[in-house]
Image (cartoon, rainbow, N blue to C red; front, side, top):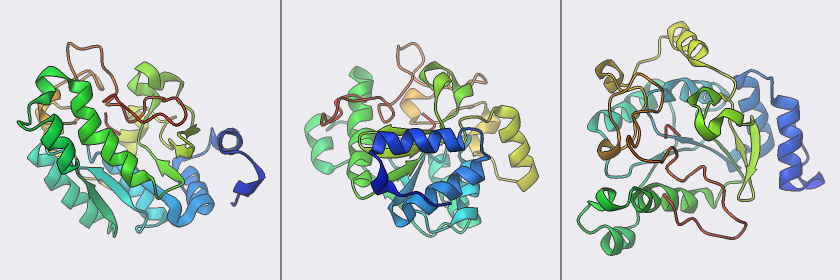
Length: 244
């Protein structure tokens, strides 16, 4: 499957791809994404509680697709170990660790405690800005978001336009039953913290055990997204800060 990107605007291309792929199997969506963008396509993964499914699917399309991993400096040690386990298990050849810029940390979070006073600001310098820089070399990217996560994700399309790029959400249609069945079929290893009651895993200061989807993230705050998937006005850099 191939598409002529020059024949449409980016929003138009996203709408057409979404119409064609909205009911497709995740593997079909990923193959279409790779056919469209090739080496200009990246996967963004948190290596969190549900990440093994998408990483395994991507490895079947091409294990050389770049995987962008946001190493915020605030992750659980178990997540860093899991990243190594899955990269080796799936023979992923291009996992890139994205870290916050030294100047951002020095000027905005010198004591590594910004999360106490501004979770949005902390997410911004540790997630949003590093990813913005890394995605500048790509035209399309893949996320692990799913509608059953709730919140703004309830109406999640399979393909969408965001900041001039095409974003693929190949697992949008899948629920927990489909994820669990895929994990069992392929005997995928679980994140070590899942057995300790963590259903969704981000940075340690803002993640609590929970068996209810993403409810363990930013508990007690009116926040459901780190900022990566928050819409922005064209040409406006993010100033806000999930399983990705």
